[in-house]
Length: 172
Image (cartoon, rainbow, N blue to C red; front, side, top):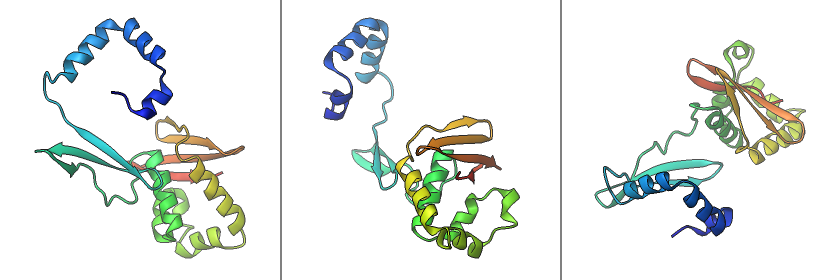
């Protein structure tokens, strides 16, 4: 009953060993899967640059359980990174300003943001963005209101949370 993706990650021997080593947990999980208690059937549809929509089954029909129009989510460092990359690819420099920490915001406007990414440094910035996109699922370490992600061979993106929203403090 396991998907081909699961079977590619976990061998039959590993699965049997996990079951043998954890009989109590296997029994409890088996009981829950038999329908004891409330069961919510849900799915996650992944698309684009790490985008996803959560679906739940209600009355035999699939319904949206997350906002499909949350294009520029800043609820987590990863969501902020994906949103920033989306804004860049769509040329939404006005939106990219949302990801600039407050202490730098006074010195930045749409024209300066555009110049930073399309001006004389365009080629290195494009390479940086490509490296970020290739690493969008890499590990992000959070510590309080700060986070960081190592990407590429020598780069690091730093995040800061301000008033509940994650922003990109430094791309490198």
